[in-house]
Image 1 (cartoon, rainbow, N blue to C red):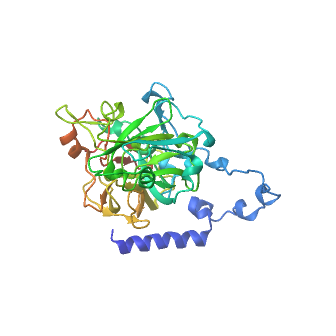
Image 2: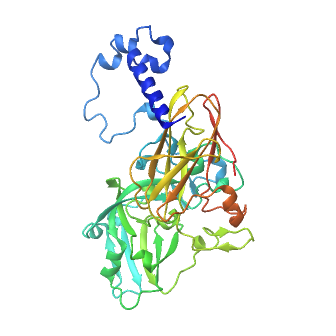
Image 3: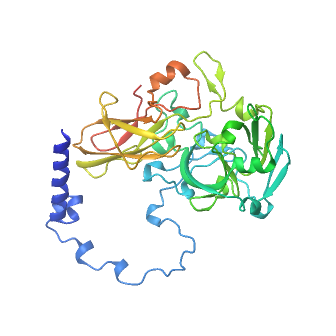
Length: 422
């Protein structure tokens, strides 16, 4: 079908719906029957609503109570060192509300009061310093929107289709506007003398796991942020309140929460979280480390297993998210036939560096089966690979950094299922 015909079809549908009233959307059979939602006074219009103080801190309305984080019980031994997933199938736009942004803890979310917070910078600096929370607020701050993705996001899909929902296959990601102080500002305050090339910083959290990661000085002085706000408000406890590190484009494990110490060093520490964990096992059985950047990736969030087509035939909005740790997303293609043919999707706005991009494909659906896929292309020209292309290099024993093309099988009744199309 040509684009011209698609446009005509959509206009005809919308014109018909307007002529018949809202009932037409639900079905033509109701068109000649008075709709009580229009002709009768409803309960919500027959009395008074809540006063302005009914909810001092606003929460989602009860009708949206299913838009919540979820975990997979069998994935970890308990919920203390575990993961839950962002309900990306039920969100639109690009900003993730803090209340449903995924969590990953190694020893549980701790309760650290702002007044008790301390951040130490030591090691190869002129003057070791300790900052309070109030100290950090006195430095010039910046605001940036960045995605944070766990390196294990989509990790269960290496061996085939495993989890039936975009929330579970791709939900270890969020995208928020962070407010904080550039790390380079604090390092310069402590004093960096001499040649810093080849130097590293080791960043450590205050929780019992003492999660720590090594970061090359070049990245530390570039765009790393010591953040204390997200989406305009204080960080949530589960996201590292009162202060966390933001490492744009790099794997989420390096975004250390409850940040307590930054040490300037001659080399990396090679901690547990960067040797036995968060490395990539290759086809020949060896493992590579220092693969921090999250490559270009995308997923269709609707239709998807948790967001089936429920409105019948006609206009259909296919939508999803794309991102790249190497920069901005420049194009997203969508396939309805498992990668045989592709259509270029519409980006909601030009892609932004290391932030989620929302895409849409406005189309028509007549009940045909579809094998829906999306593939992202970033500003470096990198094209999101298929599972087969990844496996040629990585084999089947990897866990981390799976950015393969995802497939949803949409059935004639509108339901969708996670399937393997390599």
